[in-house]
Length: 147
Image (cartoon, rainbow, N blue to C red; front, side, top):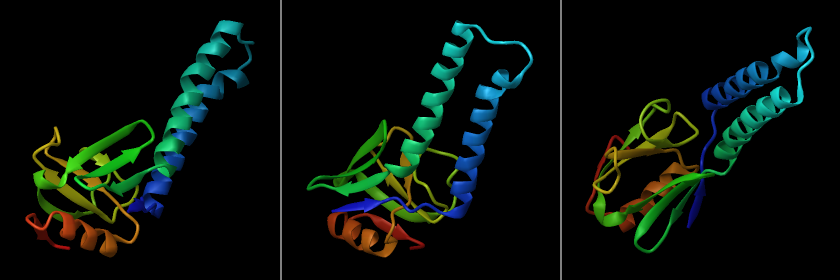
């Protein structure tokens, strides 16, 4: 079973602002008086375009996939496989800026697991209630708080 990540207005504003800042900083030299040489243009494009594409990909490819033994939270180049047996606590969170997160919304869940390097991962599935029901079936031993 696969769940897409929920995308809300605060996250959209943050992403649009980040992309706009990257684009302005990366392409501003083209609008200055002095012409750019080939290497300057190459460096600007090589640094700016991949960063913008990565932000866009991370926003629209975030998925949470239930497998037989683990939950796979993935987004573009990043992801985590979270074994159900290692999940010990799940609770709601609105903090989408700090911590290890694979989420695109303020309305999210924080999953605490012994197998995650930082101790927890923040996710934001669409159809949150159905996602929680499915997670409870697979990790019934975990403690569910404020859900």
